[in-house]
Image (cartoon, rainbow, N blue to C red):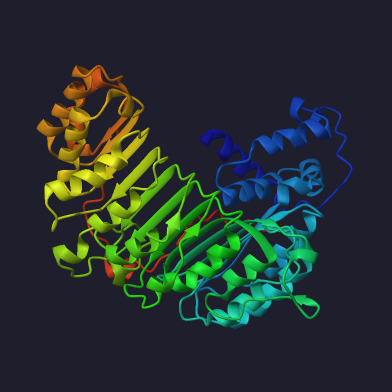
Length: 484
């Protein structure tokens, strides 16, 4: 692939000044590739699509500069231009004309739009609106990354319009702050909430939730690191309870004086729930109000003790006592979800609770699982897993096929694996450990079909490097001279 990419780059450099020509050249001696029909070339270009959309777009741009014939085929293939990215960085280069050109090439097809504004300037917002508004009806996916210093009530009205009838995914990220992802299905206009002749448009920092709920059928909702109390989230959940399938809620609000007044809420279609917290008390008060009869995938994450790459710096490693970090009440609140087959506990601890107090809720959670992940959790959780394997019925244990453990307690891990074998349980299909434990991988071979290593970042990133994009930046391609 590297050699092919170099060849394409060389060809692009040689023919970068070519203009659009619908008629392919007719040389007397043609090589085999130039003899291919246009439809065959078109399908070959489609096969060049990469997993990264920006990389795919740059590949298409490079291929369009190889020769006049290829450029004619590519410019008349709308399916190759269904993704655009409009960035405004510290260099303050306005790419709106190029983006408008790409959008015109996609014709009537649905498009995915990625907007990035990592400087605190208001002028680019109006450039966004001018370039994107004529094509808003075709937006299928909209990703917006903005600087934290920009007022959100200025950004959202320019980005969100009432014409996005095809929108299925809206992603809003504020640099070094919160992150929201919403997946939805289009709602017919006569069923959407209206205000006069226009659909409701978001005006405040969280009213985009109200905008999407009223205008779309939400199927997936991800709210991370927002200062959104449970009492404010519940009206949104009530309006989506007949369609919501996946929910991710990382709450940074520790106290919510109104959560005791909230009714219990049933979400019958919800199959995946991710709960993040810094103080588990806030998460347990939320989970305790939910009725989830079909929940099968559960993810619990203490992002204060075990931060991820996108966790804001001010939320990491907050000084808390063992009692404040104790998640036993949260584990108890999770016990009624009896259909859970995949459980992930990341950074969860119960240091202030006794072994017996934690044993019962974890026994209910561990039995019947198909997949279990214990990442940087309380060490007694692995002891409890051993006890559950020893005492529970075989029928409650044999479904477990994937296990991830980051513990460094090699004797305990081996005791657990040998106990599984002694009880006649099937081999694990996937067994993952950290790099240190992987040094002894030859001892695990007889207990698992597939063995994986989960890497761990040992260093702590500096504060200056945390305020980065919520999405990884792609490598900058070499500048291409001439028309895009």
